Length: 472
Image (cartoon, rainbow, N blue to C red):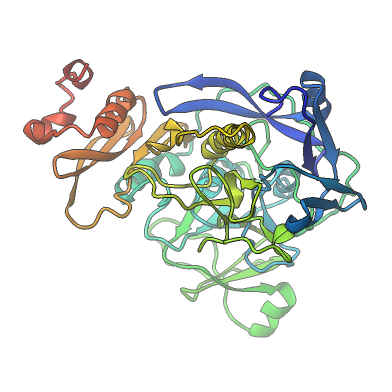
């Protein structure tokens, strides 16, 4: 916006003194991109673009009919166009329990590191990206991992890929991850507290995609990895030590291979009762059960159309249902008719694309031009890293919404690569690539151009055939 309108004032309102900047951006292919998310002081942005003014204050109220924003520090601002990018906040199981820690921003990630340093056992609840990375990175602490699904990581891959990854999770010897040399700016002067605190209403700045880099995630014990997964269960209740003693129930020790589970003699600060009837004691609980759009400050007296997932509905020009108000990133729900191989997922990749595109749409509106839906919404494409493997997901990689007439093709080399493609009517609709497969660009093209591949059959994944040359 600042570049499109150098003579207009652009206000950025944020409750946090730091901003997130995209650095080391790399266009891997047509739709795949890699980048780092770095925290920088907001003054850097103001230096770079003199027409940007950063207002460090939370938003108290939006009066859309008056085109006004009221901030927590008692000021009010008029706007011509407004874009809401307030992100999402974690769904915390058992809000307000001091032993439940949500990891949602830089500060809570550091609070987690501090608590982990004194911990012998923790319970992790959730099965998304943060839970996956967390469980893999933690050392020297027993981890009981409770997931409601049959297999780990079901947001990103299927049970087959989960099987492929599990040996990495239980291996004693860890590879050394590549060292990350980035400056972290955090909010200083927060009071030190002994125990995990459930975070306040103040949302810090959201975590970057590699938020655990540079954090020392080690508990008190000397072993590397100890993870036990409890599948198909959720947390039924959390008991304090006192409540647990009064319950007169038995809690369990950390399960050892092939042995019967034994009752635990240790007294723990807190106890977790799972829906499968088991009770485990631990030092604290990490809630990593996904996010909900952070719409609360904006809904009062404003008649926004809200999606089923709680986000502000936006059309294909990132317009909400109210005049002159746009939304982008985790706070919004894409409500246009999507391409058959794109879906919304609350990820950094999409947040960056939506923010950039929303600015284009606002600019086009101001000068009365029309604009086409950006190419990045043609194909769902995401590249990340789990358990030190490169992971690429494309299109309808889990056959989302494809009905029963799809088929899967697999190729797997244990410990090296896992390739899955989703086919429908001879056309490729999605793919999961784990490891250094070098297939992402070819598969991206095959999904985008919807070429009929029936003639190739199983040869599509034949490692002896150089598929890239085939479709060049």
